[in-house]
Amino acid sequence: MLACVALLRAQPPASLPPWTPGTLDIHQISTGRGNSALLVLPDGTTLLVDAGPGGDVIARYIARTLAPAPAALDYAVLTHFHGDHVGGFDEVAARVPIAAVIDRGYDYLTPPDTDQTFSHYRATVERLRATGTRVDRIRVGRADQITAHHPRPRGSGEPVEIRAVAANGDVWTGRGDETMRIFPPLASLGRDDIPSENMCSIGLRLRYGAFDYFTGGDMPGVPDAGAPAWQSVETAVARAIGPTDVHVVNHHGSIDPESEEFLKTLRSPVMILPSWSSTHPSQDALKRMLAVRLYPGPHDVFATLVRPETKASIGARADQLKADHGHIVVRVAPGGASYQVFVLDETRDAAPVLAVHGPYSSK
Image (cartoon, rainbow, N blue to C red; front, side):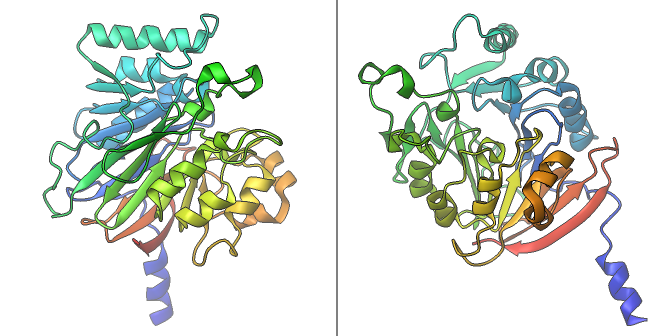
């Protein structure tokens, strides 16, 4: 009888329990084609980070998650101008009201006129601006640009802070609002060393009580052979943010992110891998992410989609993933002292719960 009771208690709930005031929810949406995450802050403030291809999936996910309240976003942050991060933004914006859009700005390394993804994105942003949406360039180092309506939400006395950590070669130092420049002047660089779009990605740190979360778009951490060390944006970011409970794996776990220094500095027990291509994750990146010699404790990796051919090429390490498909939801308890990870079935509109992990204690 006791064994039966224990088994029943171990079963996950049929569906994700509704968000409640004081709780922080982070939803990494599995679209199968790009990157997108919906955050619901403890006071109900909503933030979308990226909207890659699959805008219909993203918009429906937002509507289902925020119901019975109308679907609406207080902020949309677009980390950089690649299609797998902005390609579905037009469809999301057409279906979900957005109060403010924040991107890395067009005044540094503006994509060429021939870049149709950027041209389409910019046209969408201008249409939103004309109808009253606020459009801003990210202000690195600042924690007063993306704010909760009620910083100390009902149900928790702990504040919520979202700080812009990096973009366009500027990186927060970890002291006040101070920033430093890690990119050399463009005029001093040869053509092969001009910063890439990925290097310019926005990085955000969210802090809620003892809980810390980081997301950084496609920022790299392992420069190409012979490339200058400053191209490891992760290095400067890691030194600024320090230990982190949950981070989104940079650049989908491709070959150039998740450097040893980044991983051993953050020491994240939970890593969310926004994968979708057959190259996500690379064997080298996953090997580093799972390396227990870098830091003690859990190295739990939750992927939104790992394709069969990728599993075959990775081999046994693929079996160490805590999830190889699904919407990944981090639910942080009121006050931020602990959190759980829910894996939802992305193949069904109702998104039933496949598994629950935790609770984890925040650092």
